[in-house]
Length: 363
Image (cartoon, rainbow, N blue to C red; front, side, top):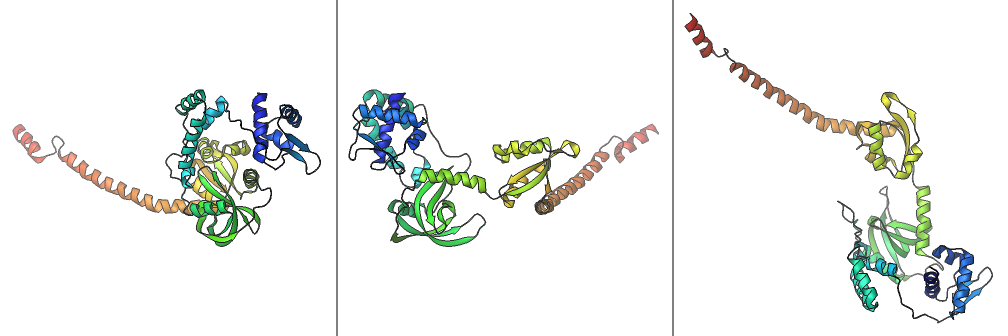
């Protein structure tokens, strides 16, 4: 509805304070065209909202400095959305779960009676649980230090260990914390520019007295979106050629992202009804970890180093479980021989007393 869009447009301009926003930026946020934004601005101006525009390369749209609306009404979907907000473990990690609960209580008490009833109605019908099944949250032992550094714009010394196990020490400028799929990440300025550090790999952190100035115009959400796109495009690559049966391919699909399945194509037909596919794993260690649990339905064709690793693992497993199986088979055979001997003694006519008695009486 246009009324909702006009209200949202006004609040976006109000939140920007003295910072000017472009029509393209507003159009993207409201999912309309720039022409529609200009029409909405005319409508706000006609309604008495002091909005103005500056043309040119450094121009933009803003409200008159110091102006602020007292409008606090919420739509029904907005009330439902706010009422469905739970206190996820993420906020507990940084000590804000209590603040969220108190804020929601204050918000509910400020709503009109009708909307207050709608909020409770929604809260009883939608619950958000962000935790995963059968796994604990990733431990970030120095999250309190990182949070304090982010909040206070203070530099922090880090002891960090990367994915491959290499340790390093550095001083960074923390810009913000990001939670993605129950994992914390620190976005910070480093020697090579804005960088991302996984919270669980921070093995040491010390807050420094020295502060820093955040880069002008830096937007945490915008940076994270671009960084994730580039990470997906430039991630480490380890290509393996696999021979898979129908069952093996089904198992492989369960451990690889859905977006990869179409890229496998039909593959070349191989012996026994299997076919050949090429899979782009992130690293050799990930390839080993995922393939080793797929069983005989998946066989590595190349590279040879990966095949050799899996052969070594198979040999180690065979040494452990093969020896146990052989021992059990041997013990079972020994027990089976004894049982047969006992059963032969119990067979009719086999025992000396029964045979002898029958023979004697016949004679």
